[in-house]
Image 1 (cartoon, one colour):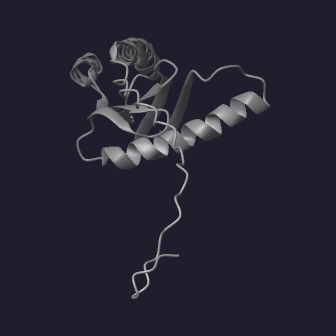
Image 2 (cartoon, rainbow, N blue to C red):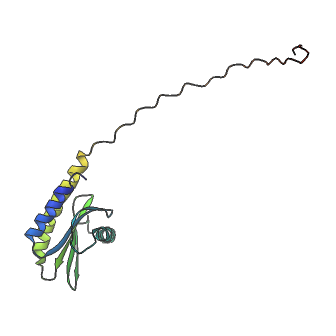
Image 3 (cartoon, rainbow, N blue to C red):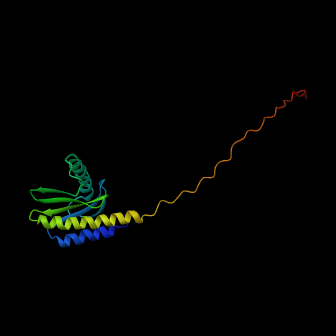
Length: 160
């Protein structure tokens, strides 16, 4: 992806603005890592789990008529995991310690999600269209020519 370096820079800036963050990951909605800053956490696994959680969250929002997905917050014994929409094709997942200011986490996560969504969509729009394959020359129609009768020559020299 052309915007990978820019997305990674946004993740680093986000971690600098929110010191309680322990990791940040941008992924496609189908679970592919776009960029990550997740020391100690396997990014491909986290991206896949994020996609699975997103699927459940979308179904829950739809079933309860809550509208489009915006964010998901999980609080565990040792901290927070927050996932934010990042445009129509990406999500931002943040890991934070148990003393994180959740209001600040939401404020910065939402801003970063918006920015990452813009970067990803710009990269998709700037992607060159696949090269057109040269048109194949249509094959000439096959025609049959009339067969001529074979002449068989007998050992005697006579033909039939």
